[in-house]
Length: 276
Ligand code: AMP
Image (tube, rainbow, N blue to C red; front, side, top):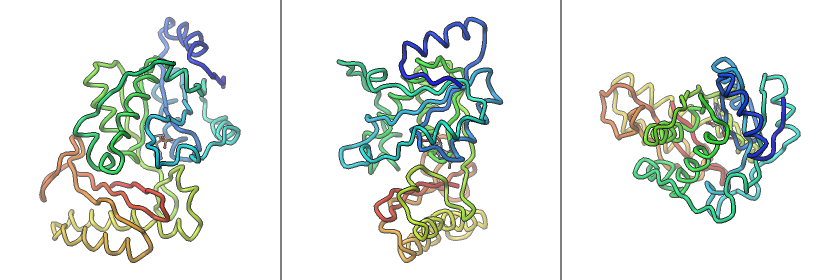
């Protein structure tokens, strides 16, 4: 496993491999790695000859009141976790490798990027799209793996790839959960053990909505009950619990097929996302 800290060095390593016809599998992350990230890496090793994992806390996707400065960073621990997962390159670029001086390009993700997560974080997906496209170019990725944990992000990346005719296959990977059902997330580190127990209610409640939907019962009151239960159990705020089409994320009515229930809520000031 080689550690690469700048774009020039990455190109030097990757170019000859591409010339030999090797396929590149890519897993972008912001570090503070957990089993969810490792599951994406394991998929990448099955789908490609060479695996690159990037670790980059992307300033462009944080707004001023968010946790860019305090986002968990532990390089040593991350590298230790990756060691046994057949990764060829860990790419940890400097900010200037992604955003060189004078860089002023923007990608606007439009309507899809303004809803759900985009309501609370209007510039978030534009920042994500930009860094992901830069990283696709720098890594020469053939295949890239993204978690369904960030379902809207996965949908937006698929759209960006299609819109820009990028030759990268996007694979969505299932959500890895703690034993109590809580979706693993780097930001779970901000929660105490009792708070993690409360946090698990998010999955429990959206699963209850799913069961109601599948039973063909009144889903609006199920969503209302889920909201109330979350607040009662200790959540500060429920941003949304919504039923959307799995492919387009457009709003869906009862009886439709191919649905996702997506939710976001705050617990102790930490924004938690989940979907089923
Ligand atoms: P992040 O480091 O939070 O930017 O996440 C990097 C990638 O890991 C994204 O594609 C996430 O969707 C994915 N990911 C994060 N948590 C999980 C999880 N619990 N299960 C599966 N994938 C995840």
